[in-house]
Length: 145
Image 1 (spheres, rainbow, N blue to C red):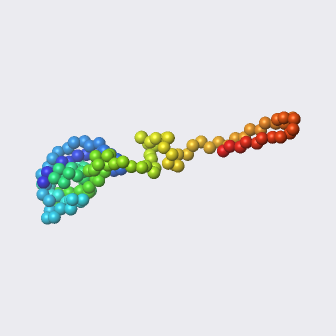
Image 2 (image 1 turned 180 degrees about the vertical axis):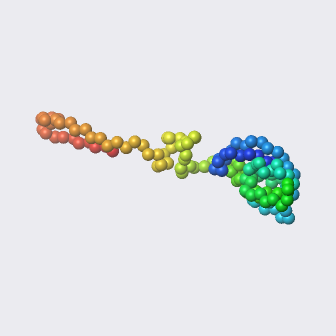
Image 3 (image 1 turned 120 degrees about the vertical axis):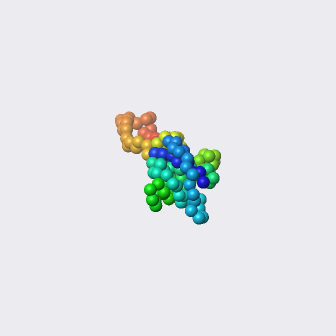
């Protein structure tokens, strides 16, 4: 089975991760393979420098979570599926109603999700009218806020 290895420095919560290309290696799956967390055996030391992988046969991206050495150059590599990167195209095409948003990069300050705290300044202005507004002494009080 072919496994393409990469180096990934992106946060795990990012959908489209920035990958530094590595190498492709042939590995052997042990007995039954769980597509969500496969364990694959490689006969090379070069896989130790990578932390991310793609398996074309499964069409999924994976984090390298563990490496077990058996002898010089023989390793079992445990992978864990990266659901966000594996299904990035499908996720991007979803039509959603956002309840909350992040203002870090692509937030829209005009979408009210009740988490944006605007400046709250209390003020008052007092106007004195010694003779009132008119001759009858009637006043109109309007408050807002």
